[in-house]
Image (cartoon, rainbow, N blue to C red; front, side):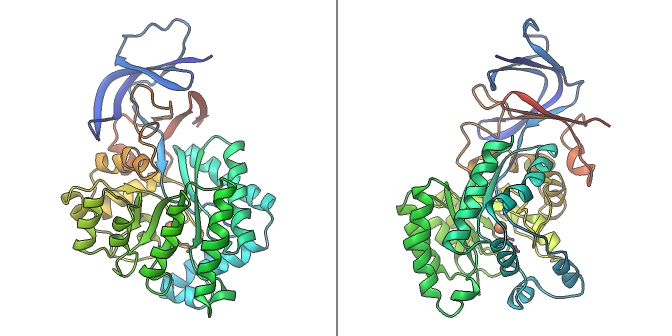
Amino acid sequence: MNKILIKNIGELLTGRNGSLEILHNKEILIREGMIESVGKRGEFSEEGCEVIDAGNSLVTPGLVDPHTHLVFFGTREDEFEMRIQGKGYMEIAAAGGGIRKSVKMLREASEDDLVEHSLPYLESMLRHGTTTVEVKSGYGLSLKDELKSLRALKRLNEMQKVDLVPTFLGAHEFPDEYRNDREKYIDLIINEMIPAVVEEGLAEFCDIFTEEGVFTVSESEKILTAASDAGLGLKLHAEEFEPIGGAELAAKLNAVSADHLVAVSDEGIRSLKEAGVTPVLLPGTTFFLGSDVYAPARKMIDAGLRPAIATDFNPGSSMTESLQIILTIACLKLKLTPLEAFEAVTLNAAKALNRSDSIGSLDIGMKADIVIWNADNHKQIPYHYGVNNVRTVIKGGDVVFSFSG
Ligand code: NIG
Ligand code: FE
């Protein structure tokens, strides 16, 4: 099958010894959808190859978005306006907006509707350079509607180019019908939803919204322990608004990632580091919610953590498919350097999905998921913001998008 040579690479970002490094004057040989070799310019013969001339531009691994809520139905721009007028996210949620509004809309949609609704967003992600994306359920909150969401996700994974990593998030919120009987909803998650999801092989991870007013730390521990016993990897929405101990719980349960962490304590940071949990930061969400308080990313880096960043793509708190704008916000508001920000959406994001051995870097034997950019160095991407800087996207060795004008 196909052999591709990407020649005349100006700047190449790739993982080396656990961090992302900048190399110059390289070329990449791809065979059967994998990186066969990375060499010096002119090192490989062009014979039998489809040759792609990078024209001295920037080449990076395909971007990995490790936290999204892409399976939703209908948008919530009215809440965007309410926030501008001064209403808070949790306040809007308490008044029947927020997650529960999306639950109402998703329950009325069919599995086909969800597939059709989600496809354009995935195509948009691919055009913006994202080649792998984690997607959570969590707007169904009933056995039937959670399964519907995850089944739609499975079909989407098979029918388009972006690789999807499915996460079960039945514990995203308490649905209206269980508001006054929390125990019963938790039992439903543990005794019916998790077994059904695992039985059908519909998810790799289980996530939960551990937050003041949503799931307590002890409720979270109960649900996550059941998920882990059933064979799912663990993720938590932790300390987004209040430091209630979600980070410590993530550490205690050996979660793969703890996400948000805006309000994380020093103790929480220490326990994440000790347990090897990857922090997934969502600065686009803080930005979009209109808050000035961002996750303490530098503190985490100083403590030895290597954060990933993600879009958190969802209709309420972060309506963007583009990791490029997230890079900009991460640089300006989390004070990541452009290189740290790129590492966060490649190497570290792959780690947050347990996929460091196949994506997030351009080493020999890794998947040929590659972006060629309309830029000659990586600093130009967060700097040139609000536009799509992608020139070409290669997914598993196939050119799947080329910018044309
Ligand atoms: O990650 N924090 C909880 N869940 C989502 C928001 C979902 C929504 O508002 O619909 C988040 O921000
Ligand atoms: Fe989220």
